[in-house]
Amino acid sequence: MDHDLCDAKIDSIRRCLERITAHTPPDAEALAADYDKQDIVSVNLQRAIQLSVDLAAHLIAERGSQAPLTMAETFNVLADLAVIDRELAERLRRAVGFRNISVHEYERIDWHRVYELITTRLEDFRTFVAAVVRAGEPRGRG
Image (cartoon, rainbow, N blue to C red; front, side):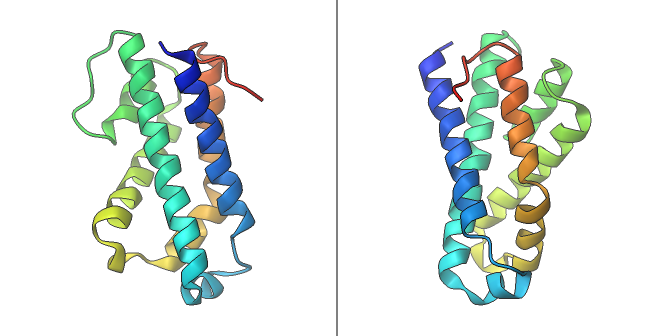
């Protein structure tokens, strides 16, 4: 496994989470009304999700497991490998669903739901990163 590549992905996930946190408005209505914050939040959330999928795929390949058929299934495979628990895998699977809507059907985004996601579920990405680091694959900086 390319530890430098994985470390870079971890750093990027953390940076995305910091950007989201720094640009989260005080309430859902403010997010729904602020196109700049919508762009910053949605792009960084998309990136964090995609980077998590990429990182998971590297770990799965390193472990010699069969590649999942979909991005969402990537997290089920990590649960099967006991890298993350089933509940976290399910939440990350749902995040992939958001990513797909955000990328392919942007006009359908429910900004109230996004606000809930960014104020209650960012810890899932931190938990995921910690689990990957614990799994011993990347060295995981800082």
